[in-house]
Length: 624
Figure 1 (cartoon, helix red, strand yellow):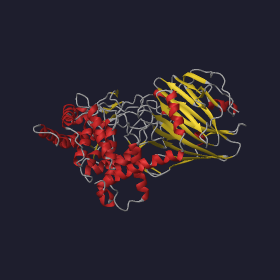
Figure 2 (figure 1 turned 30 degrees about the vertical axis):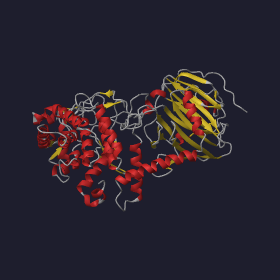
Figure 3 (figure 1 turned 45 degrees about the vertical axis):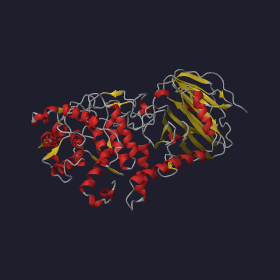
Figure 4 (figure 1 turned 45 degrees about the horizontal axis):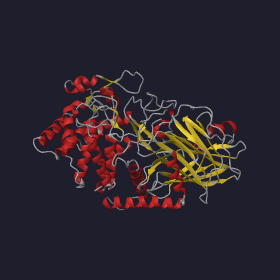
């Protein structure tokens, strides 16, 4: 019997919207014509981005399992699930949710040819149980002003929503490619949505036709085996066309296409940069996954552009538009150099082209920006002017610049560095003004590497300035007799950041450095501020790994910033860091307690390889 859909939902406009958590299980995309990127977290689909990597269009797509008699479970809240890639190095995932009464198997893969994400669902266990899909649209990167409808469309029940120039549609098919949705409903989040229905009644009792101009969500009842197609387009009708079209092919065929495309990509990059022999399979698998994560952050409208992360930090507490799906030139270059090391030369070249196209008139780049080049934050960070020069040099060193003209970009970037440095308005953490080892090392390396693209006399000037700054690293950034050093038993060590006036007065290291994100903290003397920034001096070859000052500074870092975990050591950014959750678990709200950063563990790994290369013969031969 066909379910009837009654009146419009009550409760407009719903509760204030939020995104979902930034804790992700996986991210992915296709290598075909689709302009869709997906994320997974807590065992379900999280934000899906379309038509660019900086525009999320849904909050999440999850599931409820229920018997209609009072028992119900939202699978993401049970948190008993496993995740695996269906094939190594391919962003197509199988998720298995386990419960005493059921097992829910999900296979998830994007459509190569359409802006569609497909999800195959299989519910096993108690025969009384049914499956319900819950979709929370956040079209145009906001949860406000979305309008949802579940009225019959083209002979099917399709969950649709629109907002501005965007539309989303969720269609379902059974084993015979027929409409699989039974009952459907649209509502306002927190008042009349499907989750509230189960929370109040233990079953699906509401069947609302639409919910307009608010924070909305939709729900549809499914059979025990079905395939869902989440389509995105310029309208709900366009999204529905794509979703239904995608359902008219076997899921296994869609999956085969995804696997074939990614396997071909891996073959191509490995032809350029093959792995050395005897690499353990577990390391090979990790490398493949890392390459997929990097490749999946590249945009298609703006080739070469990569957002910092397909996530919103503490997204489950806000509706902010920016999050981490913005372009930071520093992060972009570091990702491009990493993907270049994997052998993906064309992707790295596209990134350089994008950076040249978005360079500002004064030679620098925006602190961070939307993909089209519009600034989001507008601080000045000197390392972000140096990194693009280093990417150009890395490509030139390998002989794979591919005809990209870089001299003008380099000249303008180095001119900005020379005119503004050595002090930077912000450090790499976007917090403090002054001279810091990380930024200074990047700028010195950029001056040296960039000099190779310049003619005299500019070439000589760049090298002379690099020599001068390099010769003053210790006089600006090393302190003797600090309280922290004495406590650790170290006479001299590097500081995290020195005030700008250190170039004139060595006593400036006694000045207070403001600690951001600490709610009015008075600050810490620069001499007592500890960070890992000085390791960049080793990574760029400006100091030896066995330099006594480097080793002594590491002793201080390990005493102050290191934490041992069951999975190995992790380091904090600096003492007193406030960028993190509160100690009681509340999310960061402008203040908090800094946490360990896996990034810093990776940077320490780089140092250890340079300090003892014989322990890791791979590091001496790869990448070439």
